[in-house]
Image (cartoon, rainbow, N blue to C red; front, top):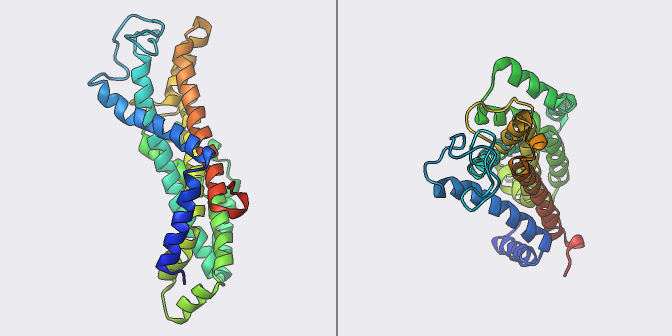
Length: 290
């Protein structure tokens, strides 16, 4: 069983390498900047609504309208900041739901084994081969789902299988360790063994898995928004791209309408993946650059 001093030593070592890893700092720094812009931007802009008509149409970027205006006179920067908040919310909710399901199924299947593992593995394989985007398209189109929360819920319910299989494999390798056998012989319940013995030894791996699920949920949500199946209320980065395409922003030369949301989606997902590579280098001694 890992001692408290040992855990603290591992954390100090990880922190030492984390603050010296350029990929980790650059990736998380970029994502954090956009997150703060999404959280604080709408507050700093006051009561301005993202779809409010505030100026003349098709104005280029200026000191008054940093990202210009749309063909209807809506401020693009206001839409951008509100869209960041919505996009991060969709990613966090969708990734969080997927991570919880993956951990429950992965830990249970990996630790219990036997018939429980076979049943859960069968369920995982079934969901894994389902065309996720097609299912989400059908659900959104025919059930009229137009809220960020419900959209993120369905994203989470369909994007967990690969993570569950990875967690299951890690749990298989840990359940035969001496500290797990000792806890089992001491009469500790299965849930407590998983929560106190197995999960803490996989904390770094679980965190990296959530980052990947987070980025994947953002991409799926943005794709649904772009094809017109996003929320009908509010604004998101995907909806900004959909509106720009629908109203011929490219043909009209309104680059300030579609470049910021497209660049932001790329920056968020790219920053998360770069940070994930940095975390892998931090947690894996073989990959560390001293």
